[in-house]
Image (cartoon, rainbow, N blue to C red):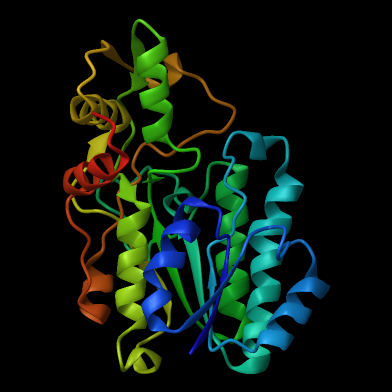
Length: 286
C-alpha cells in the first residue's frame, strides 16, 4: 500500500513518518517537496504517485502570526486541503486530514462533541474550519481528526518553549484560565496508524472525529508538569488571559469529547500526564 504523507517536518508529520512505516510504502514530503499553495504541484504529485492513502499533516500553524497573514493561512489550510481532497477524489484515495480545537469559541462548559457548531475566534481557526468544510464537500473518502494543544519532542511547541524559558529566565508567568488536554504528536501518530491498520477501515463512517488526550489541565498546569518532569525549580505564576495579551484570541475551553472516536475505532488516547511523561523521557530533559 502506498501512502503519501505531507508535512513530514512538522510535529505530527515527523511522528507519522515513523508510525506509518509498517503499513506500506510511505512517501513523505515537506514543503519543499510539495507546497500546498501550488494546486498544479499537488495534482502532479498525486497523479504520479497514485497513493491509496493521503495523510495531510501539513498546515500553517503560527496562530498569532496568522492574524497578519490570514491569506497565507487560508492558502495552506483551506485551499491546499481543498486541492488534496479534489485529487484524492479523482483517484479514489482515502484522505486523512488534521484540524484543531480552535474551530470552537470555548464558551461551552463541557467538552466539545463533533456535532457542536464551530465558531472560531481567530484567523488560524477560521482557516482550519474552511479546510474541514472543503474536504467534506469534495466527496472524497476522508477522516478529519481534530486534535488539541499538540506538542512533541521536536518543532516549535509549548513544551519546548517552557523548557527554554525556564532555563533562561528567573521566573515564568503562564495563563491559567484556558483549559484543554495537551496531546502528544506521538500519541496522535500511533492512534492514526492503528486506525489505518484496521482491516475494515474503508467500511468505517467517514467524517470528523475528535482525537485528543484524556484528562484536562490549564496552560499553567501543563507548565508546572513540564518543569516537574524536567527537574527544574523555576518559579511559575498563574495569570489571566487579559494579563498576557496575544495577537490571536484563544478559546477558554479547548476540551474535546473523544467518545465518537472510541465507538468507531476502539481507540482512546491516555491521560495527558502519561503522554507528557513518555515524551519527556524520550527527550532526556532531566
